Amino acid sequence: MEQGHHIANLNEMENPLLWPIFEVLKKHPSGWKVHTLATELRERQLLSCFDSNTEKDLFKLNFLIMNALFQLQETLYPDYFVRVEAMNIALLSIRNKQSSFMIDTNSPLREYYTQWSNYEAEQGEIRRLLDEFWTRYRDFVGSEKLKVGNVTRSKALRVFELDDRASDLDIRRRWRKLALKWHPDRQSGNSEHFRLVCEAWHVLRS
Image 1 (cartoon, rainbow, N blue to C red):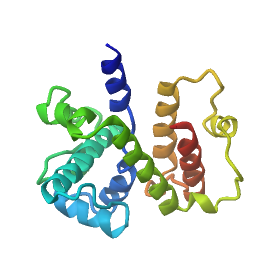
Image 2: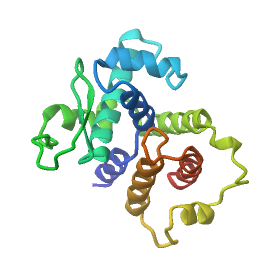
Image 3: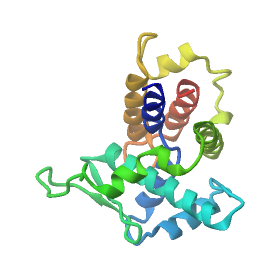
Image 4: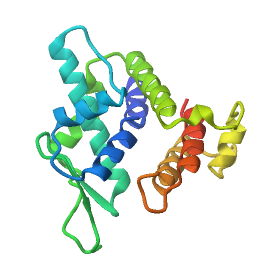
């Protein structure tokens, strides 16, 4: 019972590749495959080697990207629809709310790639991996350059407009809402606000 609880919490952890992938798809909405997306992310120095065994390294890389795509699909809907297929990845704008684009919650592919237990690693390794990614992404967007000093948990909660009673779910939902609102690749985006939100999330997610 206790082990199942830990796995559930782990499955709720946000994949930090979600936002870099959104940036890539916003600039070039279609024509992506998992391996071309991986090449783009490596060029941004957001990916490294995950396993000394070549086949395992490829599997883990594929898993991380697919997991991020399914999380992104859920985050952006219903404003956008992310088509998640290994050889056909695209970001589609949903102008008509009556559109036929729907998230298939019963998809076996989605079920597999959203379960971190399928990553073939200990939970501690997965958490360390996500921590490393978040640090890289925070540095990538330049949040360490902000004149915000040492951001404490209480300061981070104020950025999120939440109080000390906020649950992990409340924090995660607010993070996705604010990140989507201020992401610089959106028309209404603002890079400085986005960096501050990233810094606050870096504190609150731990």
